[in-house]
Amino acid sequence: MSDNSKKELEEGTAFTPRFDKDGLIPCITTSAGSGEVLMFAWMNREALEKSLETGEAWYWSRSRNALWHKGTTSGFTQKIISMKTDCDQDCIWIGVEVSGPEAACHTGRQSCFYRSVELGKKATKLAFTRADKIFDPKKVYGD
Amino acid sequence: MSDNSKKELEEGTAFTPRFDKDGLIPCITTSAGSGEVLMFAWMNREALEKSLETGEAWYWSRSRNALWHKGTTSGFTQKIISMKTDCDQDCIWIGVEVSGPEAACHTGRQSCFYRSVELGKKATKLAFTRADKIFDPKKVYGD
Image 1 (tube, each protein chain N blue to C red):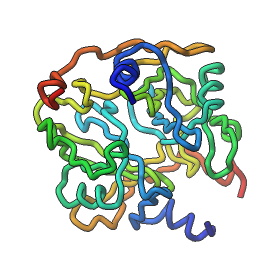
Image 2: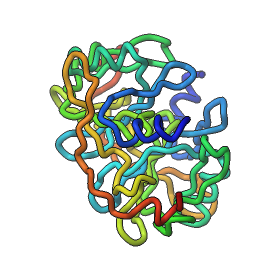
Image 3: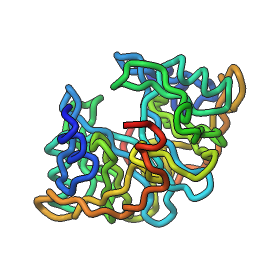
């Protein structure tokens, strides 16, 4: 990358998101209210465009290889309150309001980050920090 | 993935981080104090192990193709206060205390996310939300 294009990318006002070789850009999703990290997912160009068009979060599901309107099944859609990009425009951060109870994780929890890594030289254990499920995934998604 | 291994991954207490095909796992870094997202980077297994061993953030620099102890040059190292993983253990979230002024971005700013995307159908513009530089990158990193 030339010095000029690096400068424009980092200090300019043109939104030029950089997708990876698979056409994806990582997205960090936080609660617009509490700032809590709710989830981490991926967007392709179409998901990003649909997010902007509709004002709701759309992602690209790598496991299902499909566009994914968050909340279609569960009803817990994510209204986008803010969107930021980082210095080199290869990451998206959205702040969202979840419709209904704030549940972002398919396991039924508020956040996907419900377990802490026990710090130390050989960290092999996780401790649940948010064991409570807000909804029953079997009821919402079926078996 | 079998139902059992999925269950263990999501509901178990064994920390079994899943690296991608390039041997990397994404890492979200927030301020342990304010919760602000400071940066987004990648770790390989060695970076994750060094982070756990030293209690400071180590990443894998994809541009330099090298292990990267954050703060080696700038002095702004990141003390890891908390580490979490997500439901399917393919993302790491660390909460850090930055030594010295809280500056995580190589452009001199507190956070790499210093520009908002103007929301709307055709979002092409960025607006600076945090224009202030905490340090002068030329003085810290050289030209």
